[in-house]
Length: 386
Image (cartoon, rainbow, N blue to C red; front, side, top):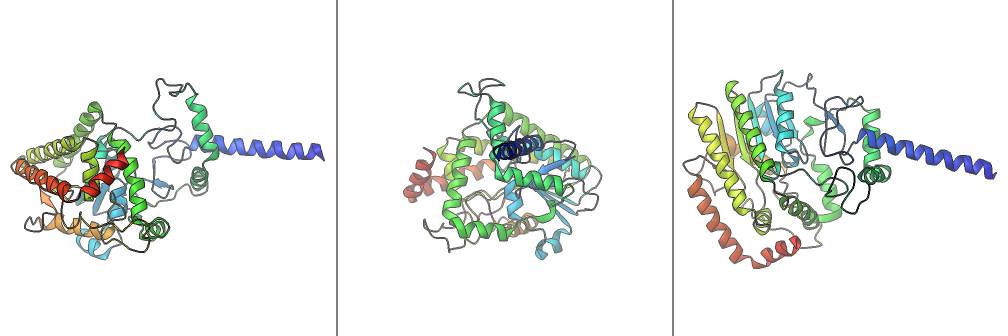
């Protein structure tokens, strides 16, 4: 009996280790090597989605009229089955890739456009796309093999692969549903509502804000310059192809604006907007069809009050949490991108090299007034960062 038990437990351990090794090889969550797509025998040209399934970027079956690209804000903010959107934009492909850096986003946009010309290219921009990658498993490292404590990095990553339930489930989806295409799903309100029932808006937003505070603190000038240049090259190619490009700066909640201020990146945020406006104006002077619209400013939309801590019943009108807007906000964004109307409540300002300086002065004044009027909110964000 002992012999049988020994064989049983040894077999169980072998299966467990084999599964962990396969999980590590597939790297479905991007945790074990990096946060980029892993191209391999099982995957081909794939990218990982918010629901952790492998998404196939071969769009032979898709012929979109409009491509909306960006990170998770775009994914959660636009429901492509929304009739009001499809009536205006035709068939929509939502290329919202969670955690996407701009160089990564540029690569996938080009894959989609390679064999098909879309009528409209809409790109949601935020500062995080131009910052360094998310921190890898094992944290910062002094060398390629050991972490800061001298522990082998590969062993740390393998341990995560062995014990990550979500990664095992994602690996199974990759192996058993190898051609799963879910890019065209867009905002999944049911999934987000389920999360809200468990956590509520306030708890969800504090988790997201703590994560973003760590990302904002890791600014790298070289990375930033390189990714701004990548955007510039993409606009140049779009101009040559006479593509209608509508850039927009994502509608972040005022909590996020205060977060950027508290980590000391407000100057960077404003300089980034200035660079974007200058870049767009240069292309407009050449006759290119490109616009830049700013939705990140203080307005009634971005100042929506958050529920009190512990309140899981209240549902916000425009946001899932302070970083991610919902599909109702996405509909407003599309409406104002196409109306080009600056007469409304400051939400959706078309930026150019001529008006950017005055617009940023107004933003600074509004932010200073916000800081004076809501000291408790400023303290909450400051305490979260510390």
